[in-house]
Image 1 (cartoon, one colour):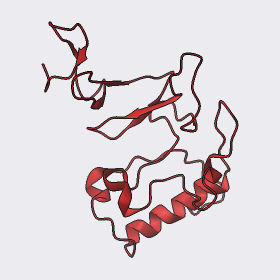
Image 2 (cartoon, one colour; image 1 turned 45 degrees about the vertical axis):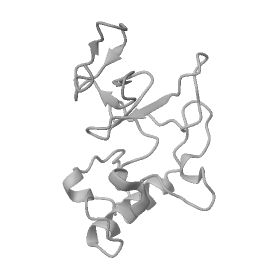
Image 3 (cartoon, rainbow, N blue to C red; image 1 turned 60 degrees about the vertical axis):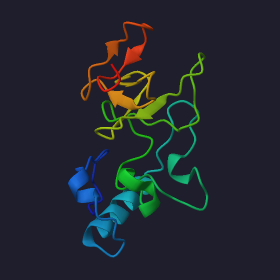
Length: 151
C-alpha cells in the first residue's frame, strides 16, 4: 500500500491492539516507518499558516507518533483530523484562541479539527472524549460538561 508511487492514502487509523507492542525491530514498526516516509515526502502543509508539517521539528521528520515515549499514541497520525482528514499544525488558533486541531480523545485516541469539533473536555476531570465515545451530561450543581464517570 505505502510503496506505490500513485498511493493516495491520506490517513490510516490502526487498532490499539496492533500498536501495543512498541518494538522498533518489528515488521509493524518497519511498516510505520515506510508510511511515515510516504507522508513526509508529500510535504503536507497546515491549512492555516501553511507551514511544512513534516518538517516542524528539524531533528525529527515525523507525521506519525513513532517513539515508545509516545505511549498509547504510538502509531497514530499527527496533525490530521480523523473526520475530514484536513491537516493543521498544533500551534494555529482561531480568533478566539481555540486551536484548529483539538485535543485527542482519551478513549479512542482520535483527534479532530475545529470544524469537525467532535472532542470536548470534562470540566471535572479534564479528560478529553469525542462524541462517539461518551455522552457528556450537564452537571446539576455547576451546569458544566461532565463525563459519565464524574456525574
